[in-house]
Image 1 (cartoon, rainbow, N blue to C red):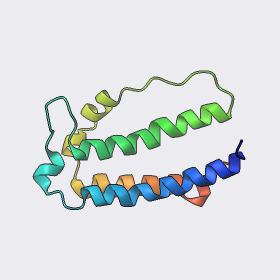
Image 2 (image 1 turned 180 degrees about the vertical axis):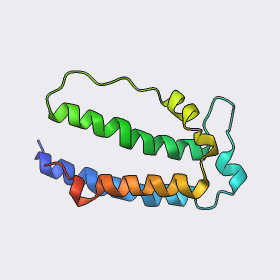
Image 3 (image 1 turned 30 degrees about the vertical axis):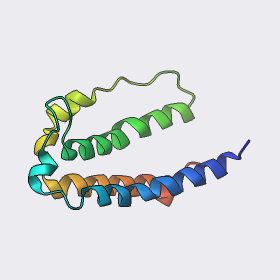
Image 4 (image 1 turned 180 degrees about the horizontal axis):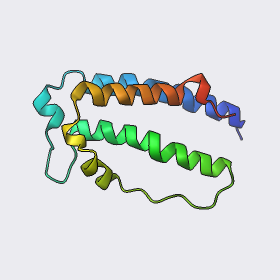
Length: 115
């Protein structure tokens, strides 16, 4: 069995790679591709980036807090509704990416380390 601190360190290293991996996937997308849905039922890249940001800010952190505080239930979420209400498909390209990058930096940064 691995020590929790070792697991946390390993996870943090992997999470730290995510912004660079995502940037590599997105960097060459033009505006049309950034907003294009592969099918009507699938999200465009801009919606996916906004969704990742929203999940980090409003879902994952809240769930971790509930677990750490010994809570028994998670609040329900509705990502489809969030995407529609927040008009994620129309989010300014730079804004969506910048806000997501700031969010991930905060999550994997030293100030957010849970030990």
